[in-house]
Image (spheres, rainbow, N blue to C red):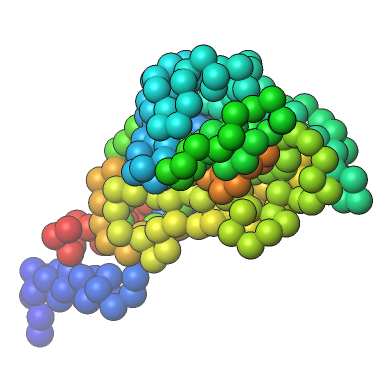
Length: 281
């Protein structure tokens, strides 16, 4: 006959075996409630510009991005020339972007780009003067040596937490692209390799699929949304969101916005805590 102490030990052992045999319930996180200033509603607070990560040879400098105009020498033109052909705020937080209607492209009305969610967004124009083509006969000839794409990459501050393998992270993303000038009679994605792009990556841990490309594009000049889900494959203590926008040809633009909700503290699942306790992780 088993003693009460032996019975308790057997029950405890059975619980440990059961926990090991059956995976704990994973926690599901909405990144909009975790990432500081996820929708860019308070400027770029909580975000860092990492343009060199897009393309190490053709990207906007940190100073150019933060001032939303040309502030340092480009590889091809003087700052005075560039400022003339990139008036206003050509990129950064709430850039001045007008999508120009193209003849023969349905659902493609001329429109000033405004935020689709909340009141603010990020984006960049590539007006064409920076090394691809002449935008106007008054422009000087294209210089030799390459191009200067107005791309951007933003990375959020780290969000700390006890995140366990199997946890999932969800984020809704909006994106828009289009044409910025002249009547090319073509959409942004009209030619292979020229379409502007948006991608979103989760860093700080190991994920089943770390990066997603935005694919749910609407007509040029019209915002569309897409929801991405990341699954963590190994425990980690912090995560970051990275948003990249890339233009690949002249007279194009690309912009992005993220779901925004008031920040809430991150919370680990109860089952995750139990599993970590017995597994020693």
